[in-house]
Image 1 (cartoon, rainbow over the protein chains, first blue to last red):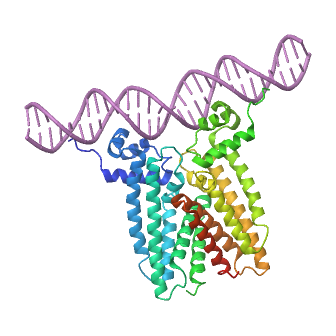
Image 2: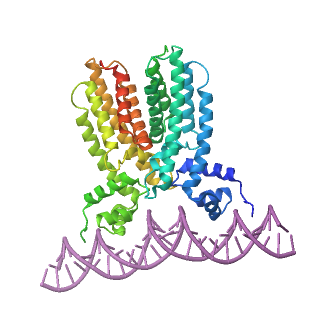
Image 3: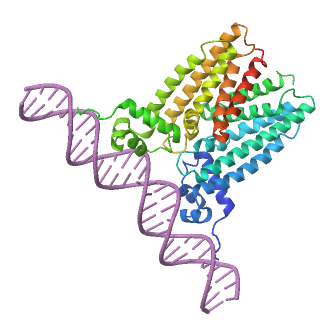
Length: 199
Length: 199
DNA sequence: CATGTTTTTGACAGCATGTCAAATACCTTC
DNA sequence: GAAGGTATTTGACATGCTGTCAAAAACATG
């Protein structure tokens, strides 16, 4: 066997950075190859297709994100946890220069353009999966808060509401790029669910 | 002058249908030309570029949508108006077979992929503009409701919250395609703002 | 050292956007 | 009614993209 000349993980890292900045459709394998110092053909040989490469890179991102999320949701009062959650979310959207937005949301809206729905469906699953996992974590947090008397409502409905707001924030971020506005909306959402200021 | 052989408005209509179904990046001018019975070159001559054609088609859509929205927001109790608003929104996302999703949200997430930011910025403006106008209409509705004692809160903050939720619904629609879920989230949002069931 | 397997490389097909010059068809003017 | 002008149409071209494939290259193994 001839050994591979490039680092698999480094290519994933470089690729995801480009996908994040320019979207899957806006990124060519030539771009990635140039950045990574790998020939286009080698990428096809190693990953199969652009979508497959994206999928691998995205899974990586999703795993890392869930870890960071668990950390953010793991300490303090319910209000503090939710604040940390929105903070992590918005900070993620606003990372990079210029800000890269939300890769999950972008990915979802890039779906279904071409006929080749083969990997499209797989990607949709991956996006939906991350959203579901995040929702579950938020719901657990709310349930725990409810048990401690910090929340008075339906954890499932509230978690779904919160996740909807974060998806909306991802969209508004692209429309207006107004980070203070995003943070205001997040704070308002928390107030709406927990009650103004008090808790 | 040689007269144009195709109907300008019909091309816009056909083009937007394709953009809506497949996204701007997923639609080629050949696709549109084939459907409309117009040569690709003629489209370039008449519109300049794919993005410019999209922009014209989108402006049309935005105008129509605002009209429908004003109608939906124009009658009944505040709760009824907000319900009609979410209903129009979700019905719009779920129109077509298969459902086409939200063109504004998709358009926003398709931005910034290529370097040619020329028309990108113009498109972003158009998307942001429609969102702003919708927000303003919702805010007016809330203000009127507040004057009639149907709402007790900050109309500006609540309108921004509502618009954020609708953007989130557009994203979840792509992720799960679960229309009942979307309607539940909408109902929950109204309850959160107006108070459960009562008003 | 020879063999075999995998990676790399470069060429190719097919389709996209966008440009351009030449052909075309109508409106206008005489 | 004929001639000219002008905008549209048409087809060819350049460039860049994805994806495929055969040939070349490089290492592991026997």
